[in-house]
Figure (cartoon, protein in one colour):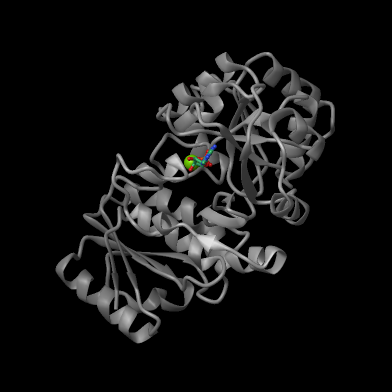
Amino acid sequence: MKAKYINLSTNFDDSIFDELGLAIRNGKLVVFPTETVYGIGANGLDETSVKKIYEAKGRSSDNPLILHISNTNTLSEITKSISCVEKKLINAFFPGPFTLILERTPTVPNVVTSNLETVAVRMPSNEIARKIIEHAKVPIAAPSANISGKPSGTEVCDIIDELGDKVDYIVDGGKCDIGIESTVVRVVDDIPTILRPGKITKEDILNVVGKVKVDRHIFEKCDFNEAVLSPGMKYRHYAPNTKCIMVYSSENNKLVQKINDIVKDNFNSLVISTTENISKYNAKYVLDVGSKNNLNEISKNIFSTLRKVDSYNVDLVIIEGVTREGLGLAIMNRLIRACEYNYIEC
Ligand code: AMP
Ligand code: MG
């Protein structure tokens, strides 16, 4: 492995952050933990450094990156005027799993925003992430730490195989608390519009601003040439190589019955099940993703579970869906895309 591995998962002393901050300023790629998922970070104000991220991930150059900041003072460098509604969102959700799309200044290189006039900004709450950004003294451009199209990396064991030869540092901060990416919001005509659901829910935003919209592309497949508010919506994402289908019913008996019907025709299959249902399936393999009554646990485990399924060599993966309430909206958005829109509600 080319990358230098630094384990900060149990304890750390602050001297390491000088080295990591300098590495970012010198154009290196640093994989680091955040409360959502791991990111591959580079100096977000330097075009050459940012290009390395796209190369390492194999990410399409028209899919822009999020700039990570450690202090709201940085906003005046990288964004133009901020509206009242945007200020309310920043006050409520920075730092945290929340990304806001704002009008950008010319300081932000075109390669970060894929030539858009806006830039995505987030202030992570994870202490390691914050310290790396502080010591870098520049905003850090960082997409999720995975090869494009694959499930996002939420623990270092998954990331080393995929990116160990492509980046300069891998900083281990243990398994990410939330496990799915930030909520992405753009304020359109004073209405916060969710472009990607996450841990900050539509209910949370409604409580702060009194208005919220969810972009319809969150659950609808978009035509590749369609104009969308967020380019990431167009791409295959979160998908294992094995074919997946998702099944949801608000009635548990129906859900189990439907999945067992599918298993009957596909014995060489694997079910991703909630804890309460694991003993009910007749499939060759059953993996536990967490309790039906604990969406936080499912969110934390979902990507690491999706990453395991290819190693079972099955013909089909059948995934239990969850409610779309609260954090369930974000989980369902990722599952539907992992299944490439192959899902049944009964
Ligand atoms: P990732 O880097 O994998 O967490 O994905 C970042 C997401 O934010 C992608 O879906 C991008 O398309 C989206 N994004 C980044 N910058 C912008 C922007 N300026 N406008 C709209 N969406 C953006
Ligand atoms: Mg990603």
